[in-house]
Image (cartoon, rainbow, N blue to C red):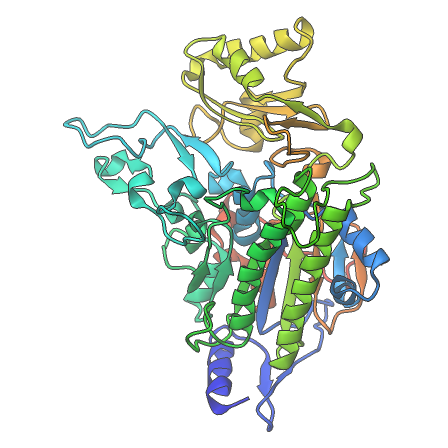
Length: 527
């Protein structure tokens, strides 16, 4: 390690109180001891990886069947949490926010990447003499915001952003202004640590947090392709897309920015999401006719989670990518001082292909719209979320759903209806909170709301397959332990801060939803 690298590592470590010693040869020697309570020693940095879609059973099966794999090697020095739940709803936006803010939608105010806010105005609303130009706005945080053409763009078109009536409908609401709480990137950066993240849409600018400055190096190439087949309609294209973000992580491990063009020092917290496994679960068959591996099939083969050849290919590719990161950490003498956390923003359902039932979302819309003035927004997928144009009609809409169940043959395949006091107790009161939905539907297992003939799974709901995700925390100093306690991915936020010798109290979500770090290796239910 040259003198410049030593100086940067020492500066970053000192700024956030890390237990790091620089030995005479210039490499970092990590302090591996335990305190009186059996907690893990602090780390110099945290690498967070979300393998979107990865269930507990996927990780378990892959490690058992591939004992020399990179995931198996990491599991050999890791705590594996076998009862981990992602956010509810299990969408990418609340899923990632849970990991980095410690909060659910109750704190963040974010229910979906396609939601509704009664206090905002649509992007095309114009300033008016009466500045109260609200009335409610659909708030989408995905490719709809991109600068065109959007092939791998990382830029947002501000004219597509919703407007804030509080500023007379002249101020655009950027994604980072939407979450109501801060995140670990902001906390760590404020303490002097460098931060970086890579994800699938420019709208992931939301990770900048309320400060707007939380991530030093944000790399968000758009996954949506302007040409057919779309990236997510191909296992091969999605794996190639993930490779772009893997290259960014490798550059950051070597101390450069994501592009590899400027030396900036290794981040104190960084990471990315993998998309290929999720596509491997959701896509019926490869649609790129020239795919190098052929026209593979996706999804699962049975209720036990046996992967298809397409899903297996995406699992193998993701494992190899993680191996490249581990190798890079070793090359830079950073592996022993890095805490690696692997989980998933969400699962995908159903696992059992025999239970799959596709329902057109218009089935739900028709029931809602039978009670005028009807629907403001529906986000369906596997857990329909409903915002109404007139909240006073909520009871009548619920009655319409109940009638469809009892007398109409249950065309929307509804198992439970969450509304009123029950919804307010879990999330927020929609009569008070501008973001809270009026109704959430819990469908019968196996239901996917889609018009696509190629989609065989999705996420967004509350069911087991949607939320029971993989979670492991790994470092070479750790013994292999299995933790049986029920935990939540939102505990990852406190775990990151604790690893860097920082307090979880710095997270704003703690005021509404107190959290704690994931149980350590000497926990009473560890085996």
